[in-house]
Length: 365
Image 1 (tube, rainbow, N blue to C red):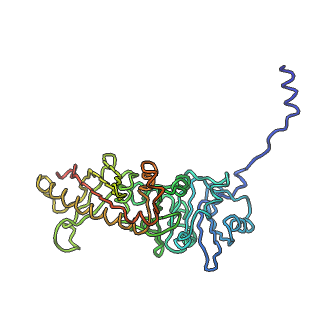
Image 2: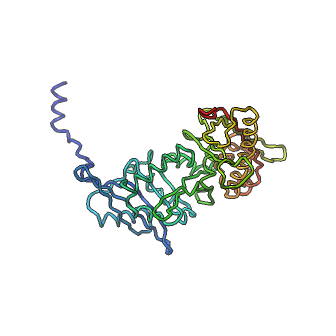
Image 3: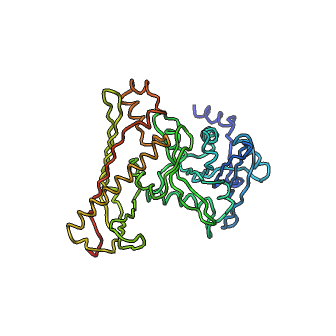
């Protein structure tokens, strides 16, 4: 038997299917725009490593599909283009107003394209313009934007999202999604806020200051969230009238419940308890119990109003990113079949309540 096995090895063809990385041109970032004629313009940041130094090139190609535009870039560069597993995909807001899935299909369909760690964001304006900046300081542009998104996810300014995790809510009829929203301001790349989607289309946005509270309301928060609120009467430019506080995210309590009445009216109660630490308050006096109780009341009222504004924007944009439709599908399936969710979602009665509890006030107190 052993002799027979060894004989078979002699006639067995070895597998020579190799994909050598030394010949590959790694794509660190992709930007996709749409022209006035409806053509796709794809811009790639290609990174080359030469003897312990890294150099990036920016190339653009036009086409009627993502594959065609990338093939036209391949015609002009040497080597085999491969996509980096910690890469980045940017869409212009103009393109995102259409159904974005057709522009992502090839990324999900091709097994050579990584998805698990690839960040995705919307750009206010031309997405390719960000890549043509090439560098921010000494950092290559794709790496800079990717790390910027990750750090703002940790601060709850952006919702945490990767190309892989986007697919499920994008195809779910009872769940919408949100993405980071960037803007190029001169030579700076800043957080524009959060891009809201309904049925795979960009329909509205929240600003950067609303981001942390939205992320908390959505139930998927990062390591910390920081807020600044005016709590005292007086001039807007007097820092003594403001308090800065951080949320202890590991102690947040959130409860969302959906109730359907006999007449099919849908009510959503969303209660959030935020334990916070005061990190800046020039008025001090935080050793007094009455001051703490007053701050708790003022901050709770202000953040509840902020939550109401955020939910109102979600409804106006048709963005059910809190997954109310998914809850109805799971628990009220017969009602869901009768609903036209595109119109009924805006009629849902939301009742948000944010309770702030100061649990720390720094070493001064």
